[in-house]
Amino acid sequence: MMDTVETNRQTPAEHWLAIRPGDDPSTCVIDFQEHHIGNPIIRSIHGGVVGSLIEYTAEHYLGHCLEQKNLKSDVEIITTAIDYLRVTKDAPLFAKAEIVRIARRIAFIDVFVWQDNEELLVSRGACTLRILEA
Amino acid sequence: MHPIEMFFSIHHPLARKVNATFNGSDGGTVMVEISAAPDFIHNVKSGTLHSGFATIILDSIMGGAVMGTLKQIVPIATIGLSIHHMRRPLAHEIIRGKAVCTGVHHDVAYVTGELFGENGEPIAISSGTFMIGTRGTSIRDKTAGNETGDTSKLQESRI
Image (cartoon, rainbow over all chains, first blue to last red):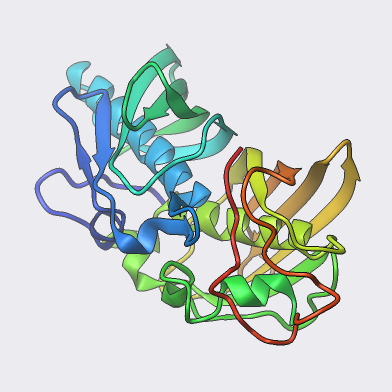
């Protein structure tokens, strides 16, 4: 089964995550929602929501890069390795993807996540994705 | 009541989204059965969920496995999580999950997790590390008052 990132219409997952593309094709944003809370006491965001942002951003940017090469492909996350660097808070999450390598069938993408300041990362993820011919 | 059941109680806004049962959970082993929430559908045509659903469930039950090993519940935080996604579950599919806290060394808990479909077909496997005793208030003495079901103080903080 392949993930299809729909750009014109929100999927239920995009709606629940309140996720949207950023100004740059390599960036995505999660607008904080109450149901994103993982720890109600310190009001930090659930680690799985941060992970979802990492995976979504990697898929989104790889999709964009393949489009730029006129390749009609679907992409699917194979593996994500996430480091949780700092505590999060009940505020928007920003993510930026960086291509490590795009091969014929596999791509490697790093994603960096922050809140207040891009210099103060809250998380980073290394994603491996499968490129599938549409 | 296992700590993970408290996390997934209706009091928690995220956990409220998934209808989970925890039969067989004991100490450092968490067993869960979940109906895949349609809120996470990402491929509308096929009705499959986004990989983030598995990520959210695995982070939750693996943290629960760590909490189940603690004599006194203290804040914990995910340090690292590595997930292999094999297939995307369908909405409303029954998913079985298992998380095991394999060991604790120098306040770091080492945990594995896996999700399977009803027919035993794997959905995702993972391993993770959690820091035990992060900043925050100790929330619940396991030896006193652990049957109160008070989830308002349950917490999982980051480092």
